[in-house]
Image (tube, rainbow, N blue to C red):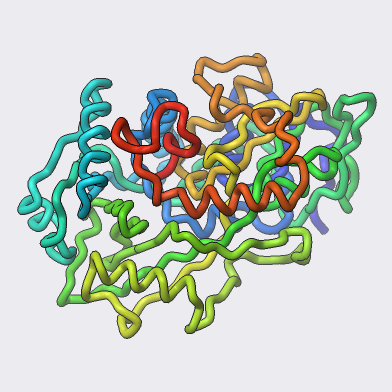
Length: 431
């Protein structure tokens, strides 16, 4: 028998991924009673399928600050929970076209102006750092020594340990069935195990978050899109050091990082599988997702991968990880209060970057719930920014817009020489 649900809770967090767990931890540290409701297992949705790359420099100072602060928060989590979360490998962005080289130059200029550690790196030095990567076609590269990746399982462990120490109640296998809303105010959360009386709900349900919003009869502009990445096995002929830099090649639309002696390589391509989360059973387990050998998305991934890592092809021993990301029409998350329902907050739509954004996002959500304001600049990620867009109030329009953003996510040219600018959708948070 599962433990009985609390009769009341200051805050109920719907969703047991890193965003919800971070918010719950931060709220509990500030004295709130918090209950986390997870439909399946804690940390087993998108969180459990994430690669966790951490690139701190973004297209805006606000987004960059969020990630730089996140590294500091992770350091505190590591000390308190006694786990290793952050693996500092440094990161490289590489350019094989003049357009991408100008993009890198703009990035270096911006980073140096704000005091961020970033520099151009000669191609021969890139080849020395990554002897297993093709470099003869590169025209420029930049290096960020303080970047790396977060280990998702260890991050979840830290959030849970500190949350439990502060009294957070966690319930797995407990899907939410309804929201009790009276005269525009939240009054409770309904589940098969009972109802929790609460005045505050944080919707952090990841790919399911639009379904939670539906319970409030209000659309949320997110779509659930498939993503795959490959992981090679260790190969003595292509040794990969665990501290080799992460790679981003936006021309090929791929990212890479070391993993257990092999490489993780993922791709933000122009195609993505759209998932209807409402059609899935309550016990749907994202970790059980499989990929067919002839899957188009895997073929496209391997084709792009071997252009940068020629020793990887369809014959290479590797595993494929398949997951579901939560995308938005502008490539930015929703973090904030619902404009018409008092007590309802959204915390979703991280477009594949929830792991690395979650440390600071937890602080932001706690600030908004308890104080109504935050020191962070969250203008670009307000939860109500599409509230008055008529074309984004029904699922067909929402799904089309999210799909288009995914297709452009790695394809756009950023910086002063490209489409990206401080006001360009998606430019500040794409990896």
